[in-house]
Amino acid sequence: GLAKGKMPSVPNVGKAPPPVMPPYPVGSMPLDPFPAKDGGTPGALSNAALQWSRHLSYSTARGIEDARRVQQVASDARELADNAATQVEYIMNQPCLRKSFD
Image 1 (tube, rainbow, N blue to C red):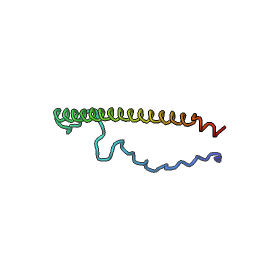
Image 2: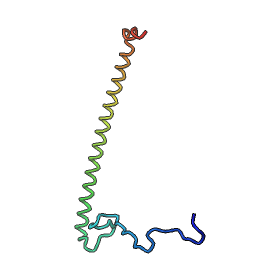
Image 3: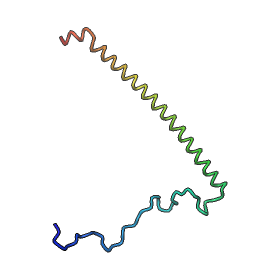
Image 4: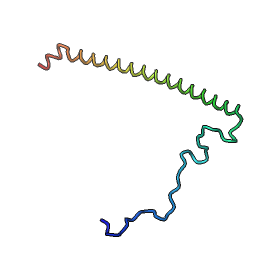
C-alpha cells in the first residue's frame, strides 16, 4: 500500500500528451457534408455525386449477382450431400453387407 501522506506515482506527469492521430489518412481531407470553398462548382460536385452513385449501384448489382451465384452453388452442394447420404444408406442396408456383420 501507500505510506500515509504519499501520492501514487502517475506516469507522464509534466510531459506533453501524445499526438492525436486524425480519423482520416494524413494528407487527405476529412469527410464533411458541406463542401470546402475550393470544392468546385455545383455542377462539378453534382457530376461527382452522380458518378459515385452509379459506381455504388453497379457494385450493389454485382454483389446481388454474386450472392445469387453463391446461393445456387450452396444449393447444388446440399443436393450432392443429400445424394451421397442416400447412397451410403443404400450401401449400409444392402443384404450381403448385413450378413457379414451378423
